[in-house]
Image 1 (cartoon, rainbow, N blue to C red):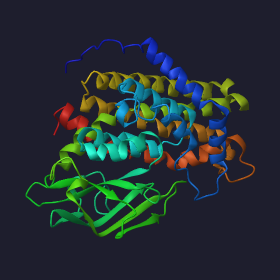
Image 2 (cartoon, rainbow, N blue to C red; image 1 turned 30 degrees about the horizontal axis):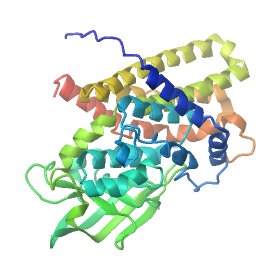
Image 3 (cartoon, one colour; image 1 turned 180 degrees about the vertical axis):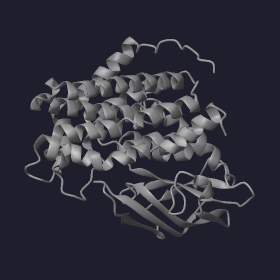
Image 4 (cartoon, helix red, strand yellow; image 1 turned 90 degrees about the horizontal axis):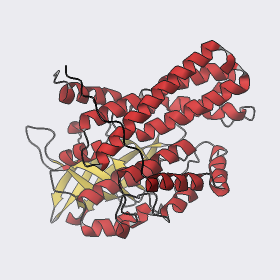
Length: 391
């Protein structure tokens, strides 16, 4: 096996360092910290949606800095977009609306949408004023989207959609969704899938919650005969599989996963220092090992960012980075439980929880990090097949 020694990760330019400092300064402003503190006090079922923090970022063009100015961005690159993503994660800003609306729906529209679709939706998404979500996963198929059964039947010059989508987030608040549906059948199941922009408040769309352990709601969306015109198609008819494979890989740098894991570990280290456990070699060595792994994850993720910025994204390397970053959550969460002891089991709604309350919610959400943006198993499959040629 040949080992390629790559050049060191490029340093950020002076402008990029200044951009990071500006974003970080905004996220430490009192009104932002007050908003994030207030989120922790919300009762069960009251989840964050469009935050004032998003609008503060959006009015500066920072929610989507790599987008063209006419669509609400700054015309910058992948590095600046990754800086915003990382700083949001480190600051503890809920990012589901940003990931769904900007990183996925917005990216698909930017790369494959019509000019009308871009002008109608992108500025509002970049300003933090619109919620868009994704309808890919179905009750009968999860990561293997070639098995989806939602269908789009021809109706005049348009289509009528029928089917069910599940485990999607923010659909109860969303205005539009990027929905994958089957438009033709054939011997190859990956063929015949088309992406549509589905107005979620249309007659024939029913959204209901799916019980889960998460603080934020997962949804089941039933679609019964919603009519969509040809202007609702994103990209070309029957070309959805290629788009999903090509464009979703662009967001698998691992930067967001690393940022969240780093924030968790920093909180664990703070608790260990307050309790005196940081002076115990048993804890100190373990936390140092976790810190080293996160530093490696950070280096790998930023290598992917710079590759993406150069237009040289490597799907296999991106799968490696996403897998490695998301696999760090479990040992960090386990260490946090041991450092926090019984207090780490208290939820944020328990008045005695104190500063350890956040960890209980993070622990419940821990498995989701291995599933989001492609499961760990799918990432390993991509590495084994496309990278190592094992299958």
